[in-house]
Image 1 (cartoon, rainbow, N blue to C red):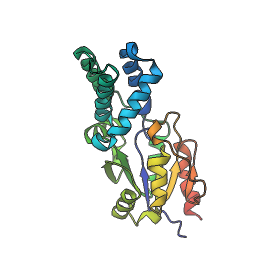
Image 2: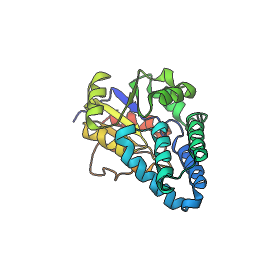
Image 3: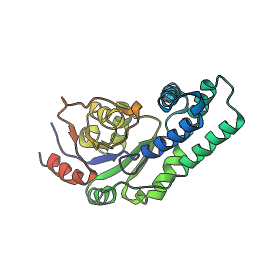
Image 4: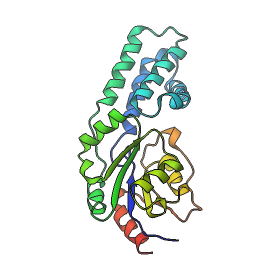
Length: 235
């Protein structure tokens, strides 16, 4: 099996910069807003159900999350949610969209080290406008040879992108915090999958680690990635 790497793909949210913690804060504000209609756990569970139903309609990102909050508010109030509540939901959704960028430790140094020797691609899913905005604020854009903002991450997605931006998935690696979206489908496409756990992971991104795969790796921080890449390349 060839171990030579030519392309390294990076996830963005909660891999290169903070994301989920801002959604959690917004969810707390939403639950407080509807406290008369259920406790925090109940409201959060109803919201998650709405998000799960709506992924196929709205996709990933803040806009879909905001619409799911509105739908949940209507449901838990049995259609009696006042305009003031809907207005507040829209407000906290805009606040989430405008939250300042917070780059994660090691992101700059890791990209700087690897972009000199490899084709480096940002592969992120979500709202096009918001992801472009976050990338611009991060200051990381110059490290990437290509930016791919996709609607979802499936094995076919990685097979296509790694063929376009390199020598195919067999010679590529995907790095991210989500086993479900970043690691498993990249391995199924024939590439390497490197898991960098984040302390907060959205419930709909949970999956079991593919421990049986010889192309699965897990590291504690991004700072460990250059050494891992060197070890794989030297196999």
